[in-house]
Image (cartoon, rainbow, N blue to C red; front, side, top):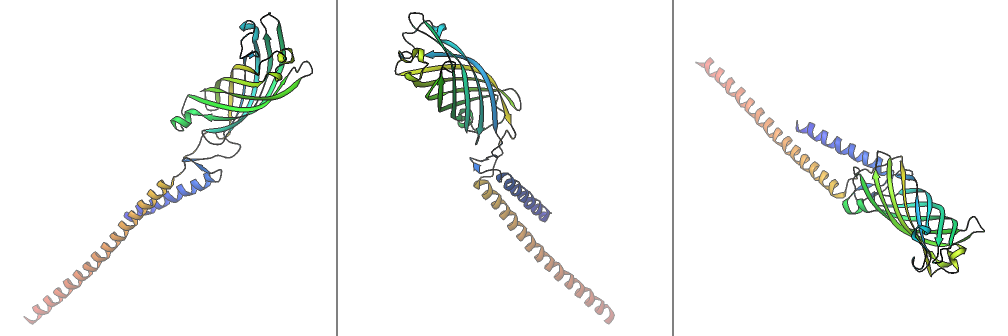
Length: 277
């Protein structure tokens, strides 16, 4: 029975090791999880919403709030390298509306391709779980701002940062509410206001959209060295117990043989004694 248990334990460990090797072929270990292949854990997102343009001293000395509201649309591709860290390529475009104290209104079509580093705060702080309904994500990055697309446009450097509030709708569909801020030089704002803009221009946006998650979406647990050491220790204990059991069996078998020999001898002597009598 003990031999059977040992064989089962060894087979189970061998199967687990083989499965781990098969999984690890896709990627390296990271904090007790296996990284997946490159084409796994990818997302395609689309969304739309509104922007607010602050081009004069962080929004002061401008016209009515509503006169600086524009619209925006965006599309993004995100790759998660592990449950916490990812990278995103996003293209944002739309119409910027601006106004001044004299109630002059200006508008410009605008586009910004940018690359972001993304951190899943929920998995970072609370540990990885694949059954969460809500995830908080922070991001920051940089790109190129192209303004006055409808008039002989110009381009300049732009930086961005923000938050993504993700709500899981199903196995592969998420709803996200994204808030972000773009920061650029005042001279890179649309030409209608660039000459009057402050040192920095800001574009604030709030968008709502959907994300589709491709291929393998979750992460598999990896055996840690502590786990492996524990398994090996358990196997060592089983082997020691089996060796002791086999030794005990040999001793018992030897004693049994000796007892049989003694019994046979005693019966033979008893028969010889009866014959003499």
